[in-house]
Amino acid sequence: GENVEQHPSTLSVQEGDSAVIKCTYSDSASNYFPWYKQELGKRPQLIIDIRSNVGEKKDQRIAVTLNKTAKHFSLHITETQPEDSAVYFCAASKNTGFQKLVFGTGTRLLVSP
Amino acid sequence: DSGVTQTPKHLITATGQRVTLRCSPRSGDLSVYWYQQSLDQGLQFLIQYYNGEERAKGNILERFSAQQFPDLHSELNLSSLELGDSALYFCASSDRDRNTIYFGEGSWLTVV
Image 1 (cartoon, each protein chain N blue to C red):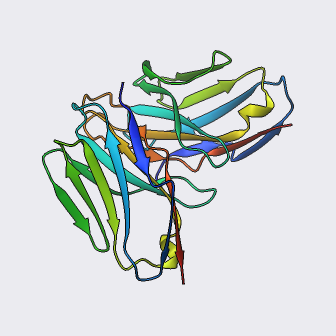
Image 2 (image 1 turned 30 degrees about the vertical axis):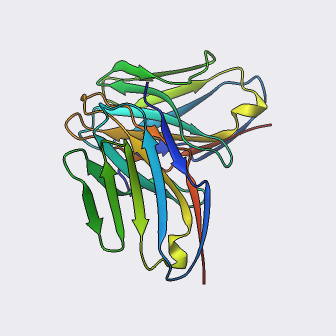
């Protein structure tokens, strides 16, 4: 089955710096890659996603890149702010109609003022 | 608000007991997923239902069971509870044509 690895497990940056979180997946048939942000004690919330027919997608300060050949995808946050501090999860699934999202282990991002 | 409703929000129970967690998916969504998140841990997939039928199973213990009813709400039953079952249990839903899943607020289960 699908396996998703995520790095780093923790990431500390200064406000205004960029942050990059990387994930690799094992199943070459996976074609949907969302990113979720989870604040302490709250539900994971979708922040951006990318499908396999696209190499990059951007939404304001966040962007996701996908390299299907290498089977990895990354989340980029620019001009980080303290409110970006949270745990970020990547995930992967196949578009079978009964897809099962497999999550990475999460990255705790801390943005210091 | 994701549109996925979970009850109860918090639950404290003793070891050996049984509890039922309830989930109402977003309007129109046919798929329901259950995830377990222990303290400072990742999201462990438990089980998925689609329109009343079980579609995928993850690391769900035999003491746990779930079902999805004709009105599409789902229940996760946890029995013979152990201290290690203390966790945040999330329900999520999606429709068939889109991969995106949306999470509910979760049910905090504490076993004492």
